[in-house]
Image (tube, rainbow, N blue to C red; front, top):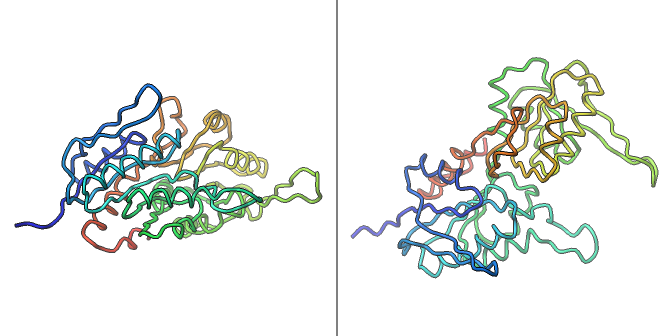
Length: 314
């Protein structure tokens, strides 16, 4: 009798195209399930095939509408647990609430930790995610967390373009480690934008630290919500005499009016990944989308066959 558990792949509603890509790469069909919504907004998840004793991989970005997708995920995990799945491995390409990772002011919640608690309590065995906004969130879990990196994918895209006189730029001092990795991939120098407030109630002063005049630059960030960070950085760099301005980031949250800001900015090309599904109205000619499906599919295979995932970090 074959006692080896079967690998099964399921998806919910946040990013079905990405899940379908992973399915095609793995040659594992998407499991049959559905989400039913009642008139009062409550939802019910139906798993339409047996999962008893199987290793389940469930794809769901907790992107907007965030609370809707979080509840879908928690309810599905509970359903899988009650259906006697052997393991429940949740693939969260974009982990929502990651910016609420600490108490910045008194009486604030740490919602990234709360979400980790909810996932564990629901029955998640492992989390596979991509570029956490705050890397310490891995420590919020008492289960294995594999955090994959988007920088190598973005870096290879720009490497293939063979851009001359290139400088990699951090839009603020928080992203220097990320920019350093990109600079190493492209064998390029780095610069950053330093902002400071000389005196209370005075406007912020932004200065470019590094030689950028007459150069081509790539602004590197992990996520773009309102797109203020990259577009303001692009304006400052433009004023400092750079030539072509590129920008990239793993997670394109794109809250309104982010796309309009990008369109009106001096950015020549903005490169993102499909960790968050983008509707047609948010797709611009200057936005290039790269797929993280091959990276995630490789990670899932390695987890399933108990091979090292760390090689994917290079």
